[in-house]
Length: 313
Image 1 (cartoon, rainbow, N blue to C red):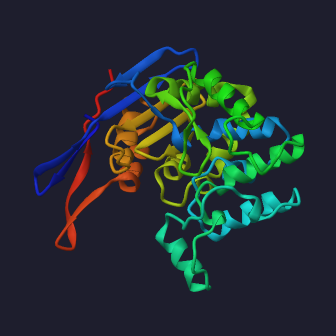
Image 2 (image 1 turned 180 degrees about the vertical axis):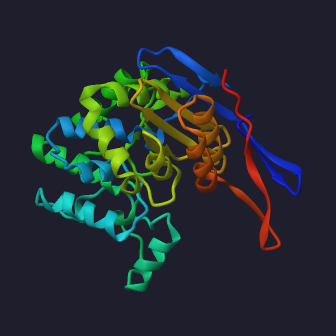
């Protein structure tokens, strides 16, 4: 069990799942739960997709790399970087093939509607940065931009090959992510291995640094990945359906998956896992507890919390 939900001293819900801490050579250092069970990597695959785009000529600056790896919050700075990424290769947002969306951060949506936007747009989609990075690679290589979502497109074939190389696992069938990009299968152990290599492979140093330095660009201010990149020496990326990957510079990757797909337990479980792995000092743990706590509300006040139950062995 990853976490329990306590209300007024009564446990009313639990979240099952898995945690794995793995070296870049695949050695399992610590774990809890079924770490070899397969699921879809979702947005936790973005650092590896952006590395492929960069290797094929996307020529992204550090802040643009961060936006490329992002599930961004749709804030003005996020949208400005996506527009810049496209404009630099003579494209605009009409080239994006992600579906129309609203920002997942309520304040960002309110800001957009307050200045006259009445309909969702591909630009507002939280994956638009990744799509812009892919389009830049297509332009650089002379590949078709209209079909960059297709599993048979050379960029997507390269993404599959790189993801399998980093995880050491078969990517499975070409499932379709929420943004339309092919998404691959992975286990918690395999994803943790990939994140260990993200932090230890010199070819990924540029990606790691951008994610660590600009954590608020890779998600949104206050989100779990952004929060832990501020006070721990890690780069982190969340994924839909209760998933997060964490990369250290000490040849250790950590992956956490909530089986029911809830994002709610991730903050407390991340903190407990980092503490059990002795990756954060006491003072940092106290600061993190304030930032990553998940309160349970009742009657207008806090009446409980989500409690980490993970025990790494």
